[in-house]
Image (spheres, rainbow, N blue to C red):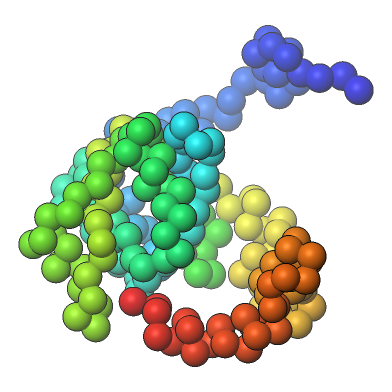
Length: 203
């Protein structure tokens, strides 16, 4: 098996970038980019830190990521499992990559930059849902913005309802945890309790 080990080898395989793929990259959000952010209820966050790499999902009603100005984004960090993979990384390495998705739309929006975490009470209150505030708000300073073409979503049929799967087709989280603990974890009890646990802890 031949391994590509140099940039020269890589570039020889793929050739020159498509010109428009370079033209589209800028250092701020235009009003047109902001429409994608406002329409997106879901974003993937990539970070890197001492503990390794992480790519985590974030979701809320569309528009949950705020745009105070063309070079800044604000993301509430909602209640989770307290692993804090993304947040630990940002504390030690501020680099961040965001991928915004809009249901039914093939084009995605990529934003790269750096981020800090704030506990500012007034800012947190702006993101209150059901009187519950996020523990922190991620403040992103934008360095790079560009759209991503829809080829991956077209190939994957991500938004094609006919391609949707039923949850019963795949192992549950409880089943997976039971397997990796050699049966010490009660997967059935975990799965049975999950709907109510989600209802009580979603915010």
